[in-house]
Image (cartoon, rainbow, N blue to C red; front, side, top):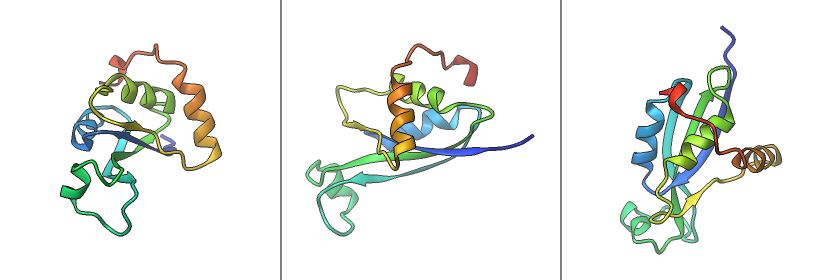
Length: 117
């Protein structure tokens, strides 16, 4: 089987919760948790970040096999499993292609995730 990996980064509040969801998805190869953004220079502590005063978002970087699951499906899973009223959700854009794919695919939120569980 020919494996082609892509990477997407999403911020959804609690990265442990988002990580747990994607660990169950077929085609997801790795998940790395971390932080994105923020206005505090250097490396703020976890306690500082949790205070909400640093501007950081908890993020997960997901590496997935596009022959098993598409970026659009990854995006739909992310968008349908977030508690938008509690956390600041983000999708950091690293390049123009990612921006185009995110914009195009975010308009298609009717796909099902059941095939990937």
